[in-house]
Image (cartoon, rainbow, N blue to C red; front, side, top):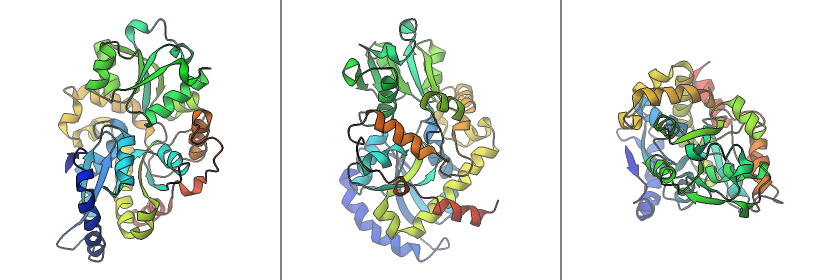
Length: 348
């Protein structure tokens, strides 16, 4: 089931009460009359970077594990993170970099399954400014679009500007979301450049509204832009929930790992056929094209890419006063235990 995040906090207390029922249901297994109910919030369900969430649901892999998973849509990853910390949901599909950012603030969340090894993000520049903005150094004096302040697009934009030799006061960041709101902001000259994902990228290019400035949709292009693989989209939970709900976490990992294998072994067109039709935003061919161009961002097995956490930490330390000077224990930001167990269960 797909829902909006608008009512989540109001239901937070009910979710907490439901936790006991989830634990009890876990003792019954997949054959139980009532599937285990879990709620996962996604930082933009329609974004291709978070495709594994809806795809797992569409393929029936949650149900195969005896789970009743409710997927709730959020405007940006930072909103999803806040819902998790409030206890309103059990898990988040969002960017791994939040695990490091939050640890610096004394809060611990853990990535259980790593969906991608590249951000899947692209820095776009409005067509009418393409001859003026040719690198991050040209962001000076400009307004740059991000999904939300404190979001991963915020982090990555700040890093690109830092690499371009700019200071925070040299440019402005404007939260404009994704999809239609991002497109409108660029059309109306509210932003001159901005970071977004597919299918918004393809729409902007097709309409002639914007051009690609920096592409981070593949591992190779990400290494060129950021200096290494950048683990991005992931499934993460509060460390305390993971410790008390290992059975539920394992079932979720089993489902997600099956999905990552499906993505690796099927074409963009075959994957698109499984997705909700409204995700195509009226242009299925363009959706497939975008997925084909960025499909390499996804991990084939849900594992954390070697050296990835170190790259993310390096990026955040470059500009984030919150992270700078903090002793970050990367081993506490992710685990491979559940993915490893899933591989043993599913076989090679």
